[in-house]
Length: 233
Image 1 (cartoon, rainbow, N blue to C red):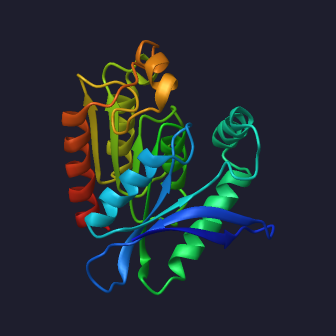
Image 2 (cartoon, rainbow, N blue to C red):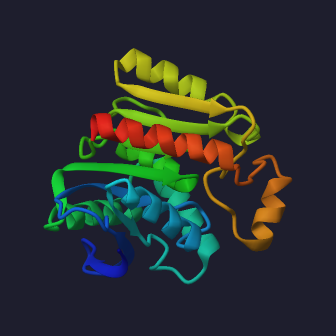
């Protein structure tokens, strides 16, 4: 079941989001805080949440862009928060995590995070927060990893903007002794897990991102993350 919800941010702002819970079983369920890509809240992100719920996970997508009116400015502010490692978006995500942990259908001790593109960078940051059991970043920005929970990460080999990120992340997680599954798919580009909307999708397909939905890769990545979640979450 997927519903629009509102939870209270630390500053009292009523932040909207989308909550998806499994149709089968009474719970409590393991849960995921899912951070969307730079396109924001859309049907594709809702679809991804439903797919994860079908595998038994309660999923919250906090609408981090809801405070702003101009999406480009929201994206810029969120990227600044990622690069600084602190900011309102991280505070709003943490409020969302607490909202999930308090829900009766959620096992508050079993919460992970997953994110795509911009959201993948947040998922990488959150992996070092000590608040999540597992993290699944997709095609994120290169960020320093000093500590991490177990991580399953995915990249597209055709994406020129993330070339080599997977290899470097895997080497770092090996150094830290963190359980991990890092895969770079040679035939896929950026945003291979979801379908970029409209004209933006057409433009990014021929950009250095090589952004395009790639069904075989998306299916394998879904299989990998669910298997990893079942082991570590």
